[in-house]
Length: 167
Length: 167
Length: 74
Length: 74
Image (cartoon, rainbow over all chains, first blue to last red; front, top):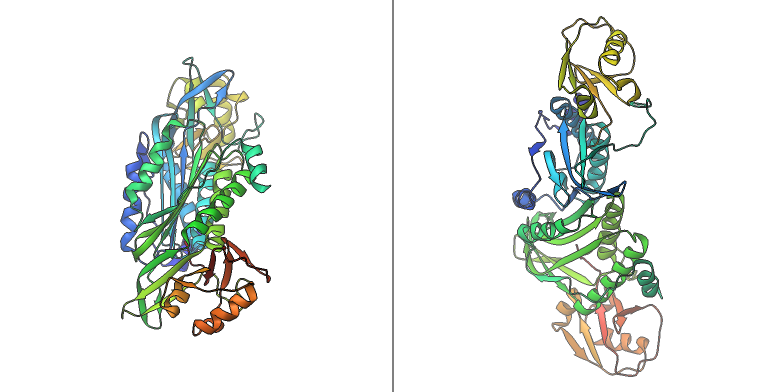
């Protein structure tokens, strides 16, 4: 129903895409994504969010890398729903690209990209904020933070009391 | 006073920088800016706004390019003030880069970049929104929209009644 | 039925999937908590055919089940 | 004093700068509106030493003056 509404509003079809890439997202990949939009002269602004693996300190050990795994099929299905919600809310948005890493991503490397383009900046800005937050909340992606002493802890986007998830 | 406060809060010095580049901003330049941050492992997110010249239709003619000129010294001074305001409001922001084109920029080319990095995404997101809006409001940059029949119109970010500017 | 395991749950079970039979979500959870040491103490969600279920429901045995620890994408 | 012109104002004056003498912002504006045809009908701001002034003030002659049509950056 939500899907149909989105399609009716935008006239766009949202097929299932695979957002996952193996390893870190190279900066050159982002440049290529940007350059591809030069032919779309109805675009006035691009907004991009990039997630970078941060070297947090946990119990005196620093995070050296995050190993990402995902329930890939469910994550891609959830992403299709989020994409349709975004196009329904910002129907003037020209395009939306999302990628997430799988595998071991070192501190300082990029693991996540949300890229929206629109005629006016507010639409792209709001869509990127929405999609970034919803991906973090709704996509079954798991992160093992590998510490400097070769131990690890499991990352969670929303600290919860044991047993409260999915809340 | 505002400057001193910003510096006290962040411990950072904000020297006068030249934000202007001749011609369009190449996608490769953005990739290089991104790649330079890989050594800063305290960064968790980058937010980037890119302005692209849009081929609006004005009186049945389409915009083929914008020729940007600027009161360069005043624009750079204003940018220093905006930068200090941004670091005062988001003291955890790691870095902020702003570039704007001068000269003739064709439809589909990039003319403006605002790039903020921070430990957490909200800081980078809010700072980019603030800086993007303030640059458009406060920097003396002028745009001649060159139309398909070789005539031109002068662009204005905020339509005003004649005589109401600076309001 | 096949039960997919992820993240800390896969680590605790030392397996990426398990085969189990159960006629409902609640009996499946009970069986899983018997089999995977420490699962009861974890935060997790259960997905049936890639949708998180919040209530008990009957299972036919042909569903794809997954145990999901807290999400950490981005 | 040197008066810098930008955008549509430079176009109307067919010059990037002018030399004019005036003892105050208001008398300078008057002189400029005499000299640049159509300026009176335009939206513009006047900057003294790179700061937009909203009120009249005395000028010594050593200031850098600029006439600024509406901004269009981004």
